[in-house]
Amino acid sequence: MHTFSREISKRELLRRAHDFRHLGIMCNNCEEEDFYGIRYHCKECTFGYNLCEKCIDKIHEHHTFEIIPNPCLRALNLGILAKRTLDVIARNTNIHDHKWRDPITGWTKIDAENMVKQTQKEQDEYNTQLQK
Image 1 (cartoon, one colour):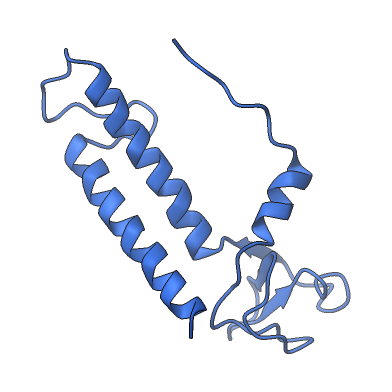
Image 2: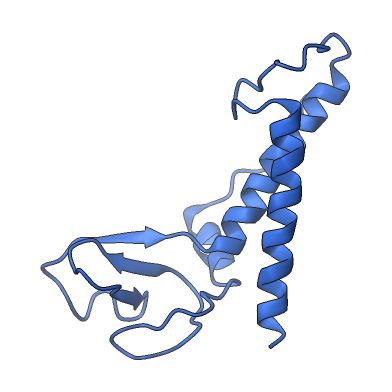
């Protein structure tokens, strides 16, 4: 049986992004370090030019920016996908082929196990940095 969670609104996703800090990153406009929220990185500047979401509309209007995902949030999402892959394998006893790949992620069982370890390490490193 499948269960589905309620759809998360764009506003809720943005709110959740605020719970994570961009450690080691400074906004090149307001000079806030380790800021919360969305990080924008200029695709045209040769040096690392970053803006927080408070400053994105105030400066550098003629350049193109990309949103840089927070590494901890990225690790959490990849970890969830890896655990999902392992759950699919565990629930389907007919999957005995070690070369079987999850149709969504493309990961094998070994890939998913390695991803769980890697993402846990990344989350631990992020939490260690937060405590400094």
